[in-house]
Each structure stands twice: as C-alpha cells, then as structure tokens.
Length: 132
Image (cartoon, rainbow, N blue to C red):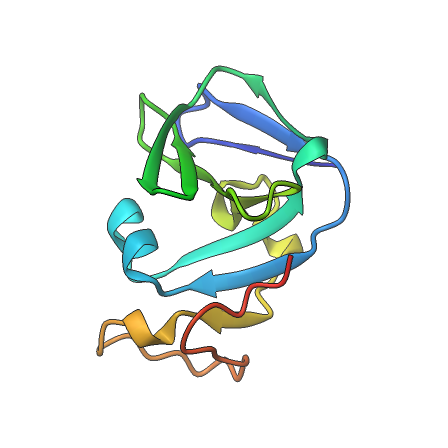
C-alpha cells in the first residue's frame, strides 16, 4: 500500500496494488495544469485507489481525461483517461514516499519547452510512452 495527499493535508489517499508505470510527462496539458515544465506520474490499479480524507475537485482537461486536485491548496493529484478504465495516474510527488517510484521514461517530448534539458539517460518518447 502507498499513501499520499495534497500539500495542506486536506486530501489524503491510499492505493493498493503494484505500480504499472512511472514516468515524466512533458505534454502541454500537464504543464499548464501544474504550472510546471514537467509532471511525474505513477500508475496504479483504479480498483485499489481511494481517497481517505477530504474530497478533491475534479475537472475534464480534455474530453477523455478527468483530473483531480485539492480545492484548498491546488495540489494536482490524479489523472484518469476514459480509455484506461482500470488504471489511475497519481502525481508522484504527492506520494508520501515519491522516491519509491523513480521514473522509467519521458513522454510527450514533442510538447516540451526548449529550455528543459534532462541528462538522466531515460528513454524518451515524442508522444505517449505510457504502458497501462
């Protein structure tokens, strides 16, 4: 089991089951939603995920995508794509122990801002490299 939550503590969650994907996303939507050049995500089984404190706000950043965030402090929390109804992505840095889920690759480099340069040697994908 893993646990995590938002910055202010109003929202807490837990997830059971193994992490099936861990990546750094460079897509324009993630960047805009988080106001950050990249966002790290870890993917878990949807049926093992639940909020244990508080209720996050949800919005659709595009027709098939549902995102949640804390309505008090604004921390981005989850991403759920309707095509993958058995998985949920959790912002890695909202986990209590983000160091347990090092990214395995970078996705959506085609959307990258030109001044972002990683030298970590991880595989890169011009579009989605996500494996659910």
